[in-house]
Image (cartoon, rainbow, N blue to C red; front, side, top):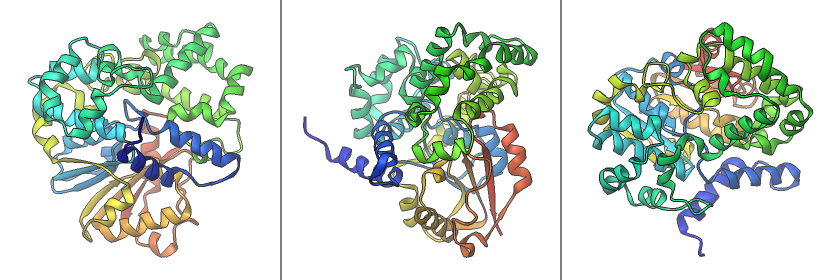
Length: 408
């Protein structure tokens, strides 16, 4: 089969973002990650939008620029009624998913239909809803993606009939963890059914924590490729591990996910341990999937612009002082010093008065001092106290820290 121009473009921009070492073993790992990252990675974005919105303090006139990922957060930010959200991503599968969600918000008649498609995401009715109600309103690239087939020859849209949250690198990684648990005599889904936090903690200490001490698990965690399913490239693997064994780091982060919040209020834990959202109640789903949200989601989703583009390139095309909020997820963990300085130069140029920048890191410390030029950082104040408080509130748990910068 021939290679399409769009595939070539995506390959180039992904390689530019990911490849820091053009040769050596590290370079081979980065190339392997770039190859894996071309398909669907996140059926659900793994950052907490509730913590995000507390950090961002979104106002009615604001323009937010965010990395799209699975789209849960960009759509959830609409609850704060901003003027515009631009969601950019290098991954074509994520762009197609964001556009599908936006079209569905505008075309479906009820929260029940919308939740069946994106909340339950495993109804045999969904492919017909796609064909009759959504496909005619999608752009050509998104139609081509959802009409197309995966590596096993299955139509991608049929993922919403059989369990979409089990798809992608993240879904496959979570499935692998459940298999490893069963081999070790542990049924991870027991934690998802816990009634109290005391029960959650007891189940973790008795069953899940000891899994990370097994030789097989420690061997698996020592291979950076094993964490590609979490969307962690080799450079971020090194930052996440630090001087510790990766199994110990993951055990600590999994403990936070499993124990620090009631399961009924943490949909990340529900998906990790139970492989499904419990209900459409607040806390059990991202805010955009809650039942009251459907009343405003369709109209406000028209303010969501979705672009298959590099974050820096998009900012370079914008007017000075035109952006109020920036959400970088963990992308800076992947960047070279040159890329970081380009990014913050464009952030500084496009930042409106009162602008805020929010990002996460695998390690606990902000990575900017010493890497971004002092004259660029001098325009910003780092809110250490709020950053630490938000890190404790972030239910997704996998990151070392959240970081908030405010324009002086």
